[in-house]
Each structure stands twice: as structure tokens, then as C-alpha cells.
Image: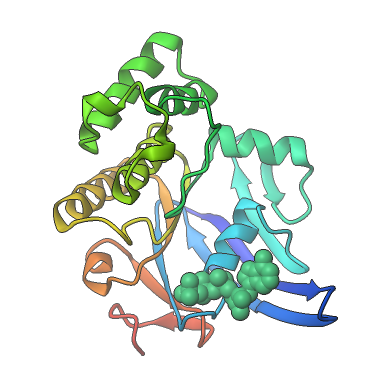
Length: 237
Ligand SMILES: Nc1ncnc2c1ncn2[C@@H]1O[C@H](COP(=O)(O)OP(=O)(O)OP(=O)(O)O)[C@@H](O)[C@H]1O
């Protein structure tokens, strides 16, 4: 199968200019994700879990180390140093990211937001519209909301829209930052089923979840960031 993501001594420091203070967000993180694999990330609060995902997605620029991603478009590429144009292409076509927070253009309806993601991934207009509907239905976003701007949606509605937006692309690599944090148990199960389906279809995934039960049977390995090594399946070793 091979390795899709090789993270080597990844380090991110922040310098707070006003306080003249250096913050170590994550230090010397090294692990590999196999193609089609699913690694769950655990660790104490503040250990740097979100920072690692953001450095991979390049919303944060790492201060040290490398993140070699075996891309379809360019072959093996260091996401820490890759030029912005390539990063933008990979986000559109290959790498998905879901967090608890919705980020979208202000005057875009819920339906259009998901269609845009499918178009970016290369689907035709007709396919994009069909796939967007399928995802919105799957995540049970009420049809009454489809033509509205999501600014007024509830937390759970925003999250379900986020999931539809990320998953409509069926990305090659999916980064999940606590995507189920504010969901009810039924919707959590929907997310879990879809992640299992994506896994069967070959998507490689890296996810932060606080719910260890949710991770059970989904993740092949659990990486404990605070301890810097792979933990038992329960994630607590
Ligand atoms: N933009 C930023 N500027 C300054 N410090 C930051 C920034 N982002 C993260 N940090 C710091 O880096 C450390 C790690 O944060 P991060 O959000 O990655 O932790 P986490 O393991 O995901 O925590 P939690 O489980 O509580 O969400 C924290 O001390 C945080 O304050």
C-alpha cells in the first residue's frame, strides 16, 4: 500500500510579539500514515493535536520538520515548504479538512457551498449538484435550509454542513478535528458510517476525537501526541 503521509520532527512555535514570549505548540512530532489507513490522535488538552492537523493543511506554517504527502498531482511533496499554488490545488482536489467551525463565504447558500466543493474537486455541474443534494440529505440538513445563508444555523446544522462540504469531494486524505464534538448520538452514527464507507473506498484519514468509543473499530492506530508514540487501541497507554 505504501505511506501517504510521512511526518518527521514536525515543530510549531508561536512568537507572541506583545508579550515577547515564545510558545511551543508541538515539538518533534514524527509518525506515518499508510495509504487507506486511519490514525486517531489523542493527547492532553493543549498537547498540540489541532496544531499538527493545521500544519498538515498548512493553515499553520510549521517552524521545523517536514510533512511529506504523496500527492496524485505532484508526487511526494513537502507540505511545509510547497508553494501556495500547489497547496490551494491540493485543498481543492485531494485534501479535506473538517473542524467544528464553519468557514465559508458570507453570501453563499448552504446548497451552493457544497456544490462549490464538488465543482472544485472536478465534478461536472450536473454531478456536483446531484452529489451535493445527496450529502445534504445524508447529513439530514432540512431542505428548508438549503437556500439560506448558514450564518444563522445552529451549531449542529453548521457542523453537518461542514461535513457535507468536506465529504462531497471524497478526498484522498481527510483531516478531522473533533468533527463530532457538538452532534447528537444519531448524527454521530451517520458520521461514523460515512467515515467507514470512505475508508472502504480508500480515503486515508487522520482524526482527533475525544470520544474513544467513536474511535473504536474506525481507527487502525491511535497516536498519543503527549507521549509521542502509538498507544493501545483505547488510546490510554
Ligand atoms: N494561533 C496560535 N497562537 C498562539 N498560540 C497558539 C495558537 N494556536 C495554538 N496555540 C497554542 O499551542 C498549544 C497547542 O494548541 P492546540 O490547539 O494544538 O492543542 P490541542 O491538543 O488541540 O488542545 P485541545 O484538546 O484543548 O483542543 C496551546 O498551548 C495553544 O495555546
